[in-house]
Image (cartoon, rainbow, N blue to C red; front, side, top):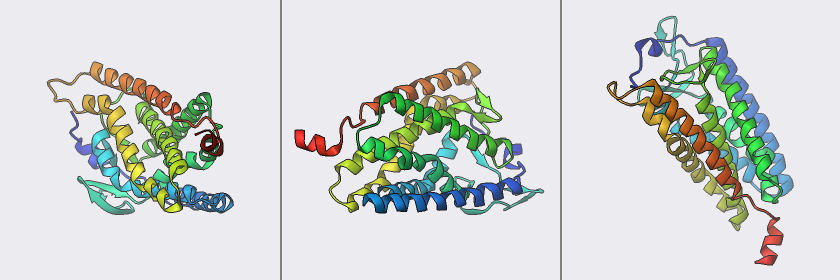
Length: 269
């Protein structure tokens, strides 16, 4: 399927909620950066700030995600286009500038509250799954507001929607958080200097596209089958298979959790 209905392109942008998403999310990011900076000074590492920077820069690949997952940001108000606070357009999809703040909030927060615990070898598989569920819940709340209040929409023939928001998207986003956070900390533990942590900027898009296009492959393909091959049953199959792959991925990420503080590992090696 995949063809965008004209009524979606002409969907009305809610200006009030655009302001909430824009100014509210950037205010949260400012708070996050202050916290990340204080944590970094205390622990003598730029890890937390660079994790936020990596996620923010990663939002420039959002158009690829939009095409794959049938996401459309509303840009029309009272029949006139150009109502969105936008900074660029790609693949015909106008991008909101709050996508960068949204990425930082959704994908970097776990580095702030769980990064040190993972670094020190105190994270358990059970706790990692609890964080995964918490991140899925946070993603659902954030995006249910966006899709429910007229800021953007997922127009594809999804199943398991929560107030217009496809649950499978939240599962994928929560999984991306886990994969990025665990691998980011592993990078942190392995680099010898602060400059090596700039690798986070490369790591983020790799995990973002790897998780969503890889684990999300079944639902992406199901959404974009030709009309002759499309069926709701295949959408269900793609959805459930994607969710199952996410569970496997989080279990796999748990295998990369450090089991001891770095100093102990270095002494025993």
